[in-house]
Length: 354
Image (tube, helix red, strand yellow):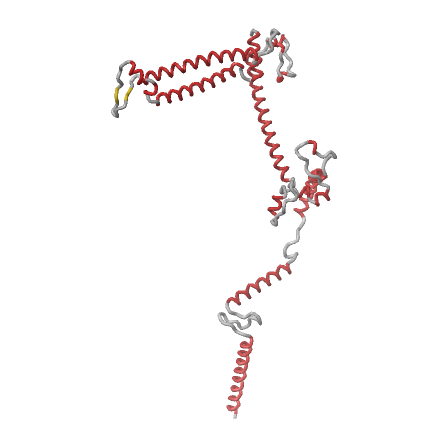
């Protein structure tokens, strides 16, 4: 059985959803990261500084030592890099010891005075009930022994899946609320009626509010008794029951089964009843329209070929324009020729008889 300190740690861990000691560890780790960045920056600055500025020239002069020279003639101190590295390591160790000493005190003080239960009462953790345990009854003692690890694991998995489902439902609820707000905006007019109206109907509809605001805010909607849609809050909802538009829609939907029944009863009669054919209904009108269409198309084709159709198309020759006077003149010549032939024929017969 866990002792009082372990029960307290378990209770605080369940309450915070993270162990109390993890907060102190995160603080110490953050401070150590800052410390290491500082020492790295310090080591880079010291390594780039000239050795004579760090006192190596004075040291060599006090020890009567001569530094080496490079190709450019500059003084070189071989042991400078080693001493700089050792000095940085000693400084880092000193700062780590200071951080460990002071933050150990912070850890002890925080765990004893902040992240803990009130002191003075022994085993207080056994009597504390967290908020998510409200309404949960403890199992009887005779039933506690029947729970096996397999049953506990199954219940734990059910709890996890229930939490996932709850999160998914909450997300779906938020998405539905956002969609409802977008749809509600389509039925909401503009809040600034003083804004200048546009000459274009499409632009004026976009500027003056939602695309379907006229369904609930126009004069026709007021005459039908259609009230505006309520806002998001429940306080703006209508208190006089269903709106007229809802009533009309419900009545129309309730009549659909009866209309389907009438349609089902009429189908057998439609199959057996003879419908009027085209020849019986409107045959004269159809033939007349066809005749007019053919005449108009024929006239158009003849006009394209040079035939004058204003006074008829008698004697029309393809590729030439023939007038009515010309046709009548040709007919007169033909008649005259016919009379001349008949006269000469009769005169010859008279001479033969004489």
